[in-house]
Amino acid sequence: MLLRNIMYLVTMNKRREIIRNAAVLIKENKIADIGEDRDIARKYKGEEVIDASNMVALPGLIQSHTHSPMTLMRGYADDLPLMEWLKEKIWPLEAKLKPRDAYYGSLLANLEMIRFGVTTFADMYPFPEEIFKAVDTSGLRAVISPAIFENINKSSNIKNAKKFLKHKHERIIPSLGPHSTYACTKEELEEVARISEEEKILIHIHAAETKDEIREIKKKYGMRPIEFLDSVGLLNERTLLAHVVWPSKREISLIGKRNSKVVHCPISNMKLASGIAPLPEMKGITVSVGSDGPCSNNNLNVFEEMKITALLHKVNTLDPTMVPANVALEMATINGAVSLGLENEIGSIEVGKRADIILVNFRKPHLTPVYNPISHLVYSCNGEDVDTVIVDGEILLRDGKFTKMNPEKIMNKVEKIKNRLVSTK
Image 1 (tube, rainbow, N blue to C red):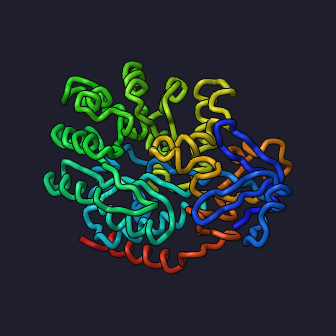
Image 2: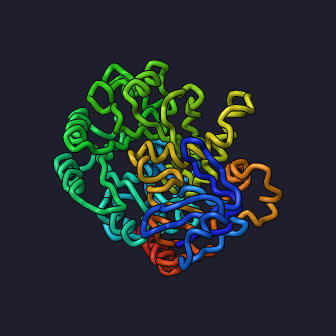
């Protein structure tokens, strides 16, 4: 497959090269060659050609924190603080979910993410087997964490999480998802740390998200959440910390020292009024972006997340140079890959890496003229501008149309599930 006549190729490689009038050769599931169009076209004859005129090619976006089946609850419980939202609305409704519900909820999320140019996502939720099936169906790449809660049967929860780690798939990586310091026992967190160390498995956890969480954990354990995670062995290079809105300076230093990764979720944090993560203070720490669940955002649009990340920290610091466009784009591409331990596979367009590439149509009034393609990608684009999505060398979206899934069928199924959930006593 040969992508030709690319207006701009945004590589996100170490040199952050941008190539005008570019081409990319894809062989099977990998990037085989890149360069100027005239040079690549001369070298390779007889390849299937995709004309990318007026398109900007970039690595597929990486969604580093979400709960994909929560599309089933989109708009169900808005305008509430986090703990009230969770305990009084979300957890009771989730208790009514059947495994197959999670499959269709996740399938809908996969559909949405493909439409918005996401090629890889990190998920945390119960029913990981159903999410696994949805990702297998959709063609996306994912890191899936079975959610671990203290308020669900403890032994079966850890047991099921360990069982899920045995799942094997070229595009899907199992990981561990202890929900948080307040929703898991100390013993559960210690067991997760032990398993992660033995299996070298990524840990995906909410941390320091709200002031209430800080107070609760300090009262219970005599230390702050991230300090507590460190004390039980859960802070290391494989730890993915979602939110991190209220860390102390010492905790930020701990995160950096342990080489843990942070996922910034600005829209969800704004909607739940959790606060603003101190991103400017996290120098030297790998920070990626995530939408959080589609019930607290209320969508999975990483283009929105990039823009809000840049704007929020400018106005919060009164410094227009804070989080420039190129940094926001790094957070949604190569930083996401590093956070998931996949930087040698995805996150940039380089020879030998997996062919996870998106094409964005710049022939739009709101994207004309073009001085700097990265500026437009962060400040002007929206998910609907994505024209083509390729994951592992397979086209999942072409000319804005899905190639593998039937959106109407999936949406109709989700509507039926929603009706059952709200009608069940």
